[in-house]
Image 1: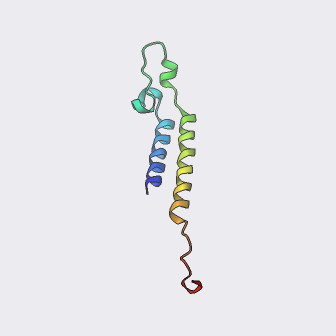
Image 2: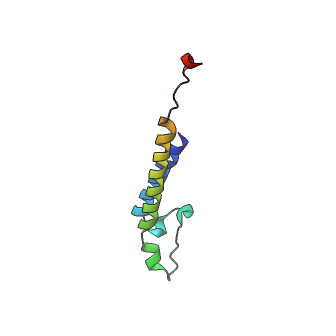
Image 3: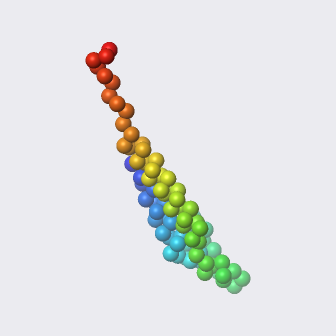
Length: 80
């Protein structure tokens, strides 16, 4: 459950990175303030960060799949 939740959270982060310019990002995601000198950086988007967050989210979903669907075989009581 926790792996899936982290994967969903990373998908949201990836969407925010791809759709929002750097000046609109929350502080924990790398907010860049415009002070007159870095207009280009403040207006830029972060697609590589978004792709990286998406890839990590897919990894978490794969881990969640294997964690929750992998079931060991029940012990065979007849061979004891």
